[in-house]
Length: 328
Ligand code: FAD
Ligand code: NAP
Image (cartoon, rainbow, N blue to C red; front, side):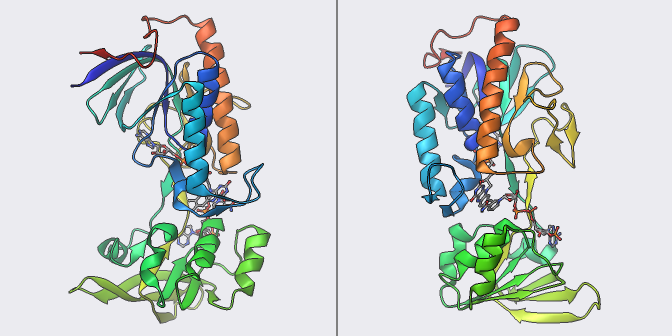
């Protein structure tokens, strides 16, 4: 049965930003409700070792996110397995509708919907998605034991994916459109020292080639960006790692955006262009896009929401306990 909830703070997203906001909002006695979305735990659930989360020399991404969820829950944040499909920010209280059929009427919103993998947009990429073309090495690398693989991209994700894929592949070709990587020095160093990885500079993917029955990848065609020369590379797997785009679908027509879709916040705060709506993490950040910066912004969003609610009393009475939903 669908429910209508009346709450003080709705947190949308369960990455480092969302869970940290959950910890702080719960400790501020705001009875927050956090909706996890389609990817509980967010982007870090798609990686293996995380080596730059302070306090852990090395931690597995999925483990870290399980711990963050448990932390938020232990502080009193209610975690809900739902996806927000629409969000009305035209007046307070704000109204969010979930895929579950539930409605969340809320006095403040913390947006922490993060980012999603970008694709090149080639018809052949689309054709072989899930049949040899992937954007997640940790999810799909295992299928390519002893095979040749290509990775497209030149950032931290591409380098990490290439390194990770050497656990399975006989050879990994890293195809980058320039002759310089934008990854961290330590990762570049590991990449260059790995005998299974061959970088291919100044090349762009133009086509993924393969068979129709069964549907499967056999290779790629790449173009030299300066000469236009086409080269074919045999490969059973193609991992596209060309960055991420902010998940702004719920708010892109309502909130101010910058740099191609990131939600704008007032400098030094998490305040968006609509009072009572706060944003944190990769959704707002085209520059740093790290777990620790996202977590920091989640903290700021909860503190900003607490202050906002103290200065702007509730327009409807919130549930006394977030765990006591009102049935419709
Ligand atoms: P995300 O982690 O992107 O989470 C977004 C959340 O929003 C998800 O839970 C999703 O389900 C939810 N959501 C989206 N839409 C909706 C909706 N409509 N309704 C409800 N929920 C919704 N950073 C590091 O610091 N160190 C690393 O080693 C590192 N490794 C990485 C490896 C990979 C492969 C990738 C892709 C990223 C890596 N990053 C790393 C970057 C880091 O993962 C991100 O900066 C961080 O996860 C961003 O956190 P976030 O909370 O903003 O959003
Ligand atoms: P990114 O830093 O934006 O890098 C994207 C890469 O893909 C760039 O090299 C870019 O080329 C290339 N690219 C983009 N569009 C392309 C296209 N159409 N065709 C061919 N190549 C294209 O993205 P990311 O590597 O996913 O990283 C995202 C964020 O997460 C970053 O802030 C990163 O630091 C963070 N992250 C951190 C870690 C870590 O700390 N260990 C790990 C993973 C990710 P150009 O270089 O030419 O622009």
